[in-house]
Each structure stands twice: as C-alpha cells, then as structure tokens.
Image 1 (cartoon, rainbow, N blue to C red):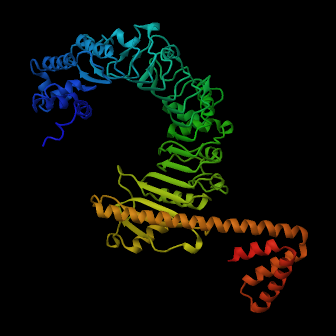
Image 2 (cartoon, rainbow, N blue to C red; image 1 turned 90 degrees about the vertical axis):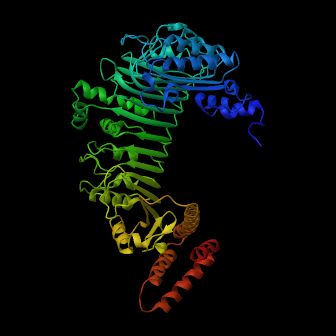
Image 3 (tube, rainbow, N blue to C red; image 1 turned 60 degrees about the vertical axis):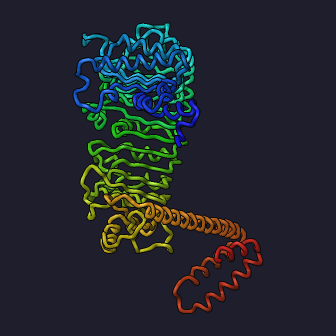
Length: 604
C-alpha cells in the first residue's frame, strides 16, 4: 500500500518543501499524479552546484548551464501565479544575470516572504562591472526576510532614497563590498520594522557611520575598518531596543553615541595592529593613536547592562587603557574571555572586580602575555596581593577551554581553586588541535566539584561513556594528576572526575548508564548543597542570637564561649568541663529560651 501516495496534495507538498527543488523534482517520475506535484511546493531551493554535481567538470560542458536555466524557467512557469513563501537561489559565474533578475521578479510578484540570494558572479564579462539587483526588490511590500551573499559585492546604491521595504524584519549582507545609497543611518531608515541586521566581511563605505534604528533587536557586524584606512573615524550605536550585539572591527577613533539600554548579550572583538599593542603596554598621552584607543571606554560603558559578555583577547588588551574608568557590570551573569599567548591580562583584575554578580566564567585558553599588572589574578608573578581580585569574585562555575597541560596552566588552575571563594564546579577541556602535556593524553575533560570537608573522597573516578575503566588509567595515575590541581590550602575541597578522549561511540545502553550516573550525581550534589545551606542557616540564627545575648550578658556569654572552646579541646578533665558547660547552658536557656532551642537544633 502506497501510504505517502494516499496523502492529500497539500500534505505531500509540505513534505517536499524540506527537499531541494532538484530532489523534489526527482519525484515526478513516480507516477502521473507526482509529475507536477513538486511545482506546487511553496518553497523553492535552487542551487546550481547541486544541479551540476556529482560529475567533475560538468559545469564546463556545452549547454549544461543553459539546461540548468531552462529547468528553473520551467519550474517557475509551471507554478504560475501561485503564492510562494520562500525562494533560495545560489548561482555562480556563467549564469545569465538577466534571467536571474526575471526569476527574482517572478517570486516577488507572487508575494515571496523569505528571499535568499547567493550570487557569486559579475554583471558581465567585465571584472570591474558589479551585478545590479532588480529594481522591484527595493520596494517589495511583502518581503519579510532578505539575505544577500556575494564574493563580488552588493550594490544597493542605485535606488537611493526610493528604497522602502515596510515589512522587512531580517536583513543579512555577506560581502566585502556593499554600496549603500547614503550613510548607514539613512539606509536603515528604509526598514521601519527591521529587527535583525547582519553584515559580515564588509568594509565601511564612510569614515563616520551610525547604526540608528528604533526597531532593531539583534545586530551583527563583522567589519575590517574603513575601505581606505583600517580604523574608522567614528562609529555610533543608537539602538535603544537592541538586546543582542555581535561587533568585530578595528578600533574607531571615537564612539560619540552608544545608546544600548536594553542590551542583554554582547560579543565584542576589537581588532588591533602591532603598533597599537605596543602603545597599550606603554601608553603615551601625547600620542594621537594612544588617545584614540582610549575612547573605547565610551563603547564599553554602553555595554554595562549586559547579562552575558564575550570578549576577544585584543579587546581585553584595549580595556587595560581605562581601568580606572571601567564601568560596573551589575547585571552580568556570564563572562567569556578568549585568550591569546601573545596578549595580556592587564585588565582582568579590574574587570572581575567590576562584575559583582557574575556566576559563570569561561576562559578560552589560559596562556597569556605576562605583565606585572595581571599578577593580581594569575600566579605568573609572585606578589603579596596575588589573587585579591578572585577573593571578591562570586563565580560559581569556571570553564576552561583549550587546555594544553603545561605546568603554568596547572598552577593557574590550582590558584583559581584556592582563590575563588564561591566556586562549586570547574570543567577543563583539553585542546583537540594541539598535543597536550597531560600524563595521559587521552584525557580530554576534567571536572572538579566542591565538597564539604566531611565528604572529601580520596578516590578519583574515571568515567568513559558511563563505564568504569580503571585498567585504562590506574588509581595512582589519577591521584597523581589530581594532586597537580588540588588546592594547597585547606579551605576548598574538590573531587576530580576524568573523561577520556578518543573512545568509540557509546552504545544506547552505555549512554543510558551514563545518563543515570550523571542524574544520580546531580541529585546527590543538590542534596549536599541543600544540607550545607540548612546548616549555614542554622549557624546564622545561632550567631545572631548569641550576639544578642552578648550585648545583654557580657560575662555569661564570655564564659559560655570559653567553656565551649574548652569542651572541644583535648584537655584531661572532660567530664568537669562538660558539667560546667551544661550549667552555663541552663542559665543561658533560662535567660533566652529561643536561643536554647535554636542552639540545640544547630547541634542536632
């Protein structure tokens, strides 16, 4: 029984919409009913590379490109004027640009909502001639999503102020050259409801640019400076409703306006050249370039409300120029820093101190350029105040990536475990691209969980897809590796778990075992955390009541405290001390029954 063939045409067309147009077209040979069904699909995905594969050199054959263009003409003709939701077109050099424009106009006239164009060709045989988009595309009243990609540039300049796309919500450009009608601010005014704007691999057409939009919610810019110079003169952001910003560019001379009050997440990659880095490490107030770099504080201040922040190694270098004026990130919960062995951590101490509520810290690499200013955070340079910034940092989870197993990295991890007072969990991922110096090269992930002193276990568990493989790595080896990370102080206690790299894919049974083990571990950890919180709560109640009695009965409270300490010591006359302590406690209970009840509960 043909179950699919018995389905209604609308359902079959919906299924075919998940295939490329070529794949959907192959179903036309199944029967007469299927002959033209693929032409009724409301989404078309046309890619000349898919049509011309798998034979190498097929594109250069006489008539093959003409055959491809005839196929597209036939599909569009068979569809007539039926409504179309999405049209994706990917073409390379050799396709007739006039026919491409006819295809685009065809779907625009049929009310297409989503249009994706990947057009890697020139407008003619002249390499200096840029392909022109059809005029109808600039005034569509139905278009909601538009994506343009081209190796040879996107020309938006001919329509000028006549451009108006009232329904467009998502706009994507990926091209080295983008010719806009005016500056970026005027360009964006043609899209009154635009919510997402993505520009990649672009050079700014003007030295002064302003991203201004009341409707934008998500903005992504990957630029390489001004087209005639690397560093733009000024970049402004006037986007009061923006919640996500991803910005990569050479440092501008100024950021005169940064209006981002609702920004929740930011990815920042400020690019530098070698001369800039030298100036940052030896700033000169009389140097114009040094003064220009300092204006980045305006951009950083505009990001102060973010909840999640990702910054590059070069951005961290720039931040060191204005440590004294760095804003406080009161809302920041997650901080992700990409590190580089040639770039410094000078700004790290101030940055951590200015994130008073951060809970998750991700360090993509630990190796960095050592200076006397980063010693507060790392242990690269011996100093009395080493770790001071960490002691005030509320980070609960630390994630370290691209770990290479060097002695310096291990000492830094030990330093973090010793210094972060609130750290409950740490995950370390080995660098897959470089050989690690770990004693067991198969280790690719190390997990550390904080435990109470009573719960500390000397047994290190080796997990491999839910099974114990002690024969792969001896207990002695695991304990030896753990000792290289274990804090030297007695304040913080951690259990270490190791997961091996390069094992065969787990079976379904092993995956289920691993899931059950992880779930059980999480449940146990949650129970221990709750018990610890309850003990802390009881202790706080006890301390508060004790302090109240101290204020009213100084002599009795002092005696109680002395006897309590004596009872806990190893002195010889324990019975006598316990008897005295009991007498004092009866007096305290008589004076404050609530205190006695709370103290008894604490002991229990």
